[in-house]
Image (cartoon, rainbow, N blue to C red; front, side, top):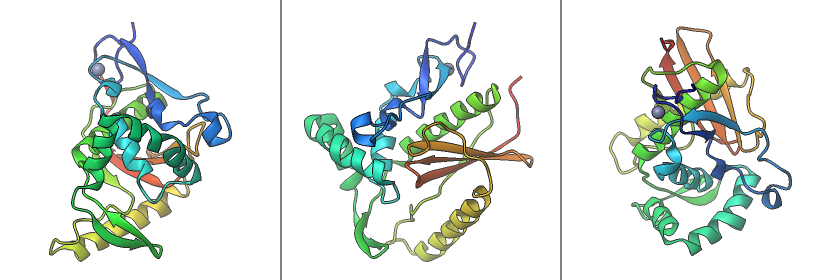
Length: 226
Ligand SMILES: [Zn+2]
């Protein structure tokens, strides 16, 4: 009997990785991007659909400047009207945007930097990394993860150490992007999602990328499940 990708409970369903809500309909994408989606067996507890974190991560990626055109179209043509229709979504967006925004410029365009609930984002990325590991190796990943956002997630500009922190952050981003540019990309609908794995050393690293620009790096020790 199959067990959950994250624990030893018997599976109660198959969970999409990343969640199905990341894949827009054909009308928006211009083609079918919901084909051959990755699924993993999951128990009730580890099916993230129920937590509300997935929707938060989706809004976070769609509000990010680094998304591609499909992400932009998905946000403008679909999620915006959903946000207007559903109070809970509206509250989620408000909680992201109204959290002490700071005006910034990115590529000469005006934008805002906001504080986000990183706990929720980390929880989602943690689940996705473990699910992808299970999908890729057919083994469970139990080691703790260190997760870095590989995007312009800067420390609070009002803090004293802003420049030092943002410099070391950009270094991590640059080195990672250069490193992963040489590795294979996996995933059938790469405009929406793909992943890359470097298992050449004692530490694994996995890059996951949404909408061709919003990406995260997870690092973990090689430790296969018993
Ligand atoms: Zn489980």
